[in-house]
Amino acid sequence: MGEVFADYFSAAATAAAAAATAAAAAASEAAQQHRQHQQQQQQQQQQQQQQQQQQQTRALDLILWQRRLGSVLLLPLLLQHSLLPLLQQQDKELLIHRSTAWRPVAYLLLDMPQQQQQQQQQQQQQQQQQLQLQERTPKRLQPQQQQQQQQQQQQQQQQQQQQQQQQQQQQQQSVLPRFFSACILLSCAYMTGRSKLIRAAALRGLLQLLRPLLQQLAAVRRELAAVQLQQQQQQQKLTSGSKHFRLQLRA
Image (cartoon, rainbow, N blue to C red; front, top):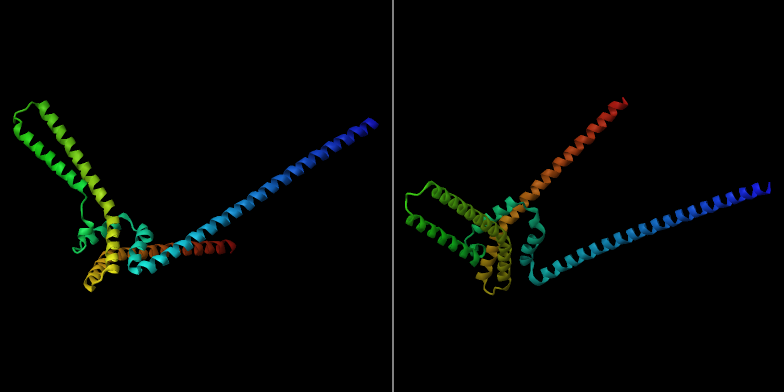
């Protein structure tokens, strides 16, 4: 009997020890989860504080820019950094076409770099050399030679088309920063110009440049408002339909 009681008490003691270790492990896991949750909350609070500080610093920077340079120069900077991403590529191309149509400031936008001019000159020279070679070669050629010449001409045409496409892409990419640099130059001319004629001309050119952009942004905002209205109407229809369906089920 004594041995049986001893075995029983030893088994109970081991079970109690196992339960205690399990409880301790659960408590430690709970403590770790609580710490992780606190750390996550602290990180979120820090991120929110950093975002608020960044927004405050940006606002202060904008206020300082406005005090130092005036609202005339601040307008193109704001359009460049905050409102330009709303436009699509078609709107940008239309903006480029409209802005370059104004003659008083076209030289600020259409000045071609020297590299592009050199490339065009090289292409013209290559075309002239090809024409000269074609004139010098005899008219009667074997069919293999004719095929080779045709293949060479096709390859040259493809290369020329690729070069033209690359040049067009470079021009489109370089026009936008030059557009805003032209706005900034005209703004600086307006701010620093001493004579009334210079300031009036700079302000007129700035308004001519910015008017198409403002029109495009207004159109984009109207489109966004129309899309939001459509989404709201669809949501209202869905909610009303679900309510009607629930009432029918209850009836």
